[in-house]
Image (cartoon, rainbow, N blue to C red):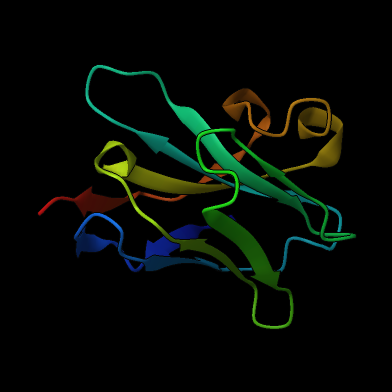
Length: 127
């Protein structure tokens, strides 16, 4: 059973930066979509960024475009999310997820196509 685990959450001031990491327990192949989602209390889960592991093509939500960067290290099996110019509205629990392309490629920022999820890590942006 593939397991995902997020690292790197914490508190940061507005305008600051933070890097999240997601370690994958087992090799899941090179043909997968990996993504970051976030959720705040009372709101629906939001797809933040996704990457197609086979070619590195990336997708971003409009709310984070230009500020966040998703990347991967396929050798060590780790997904990253570099977050910059953080805003208070970025405060949320962030989750990483993995899913096969036949379920995720049409809407990679929709969560229903992802089979594997991490437990989440809290990111708080406040002064």
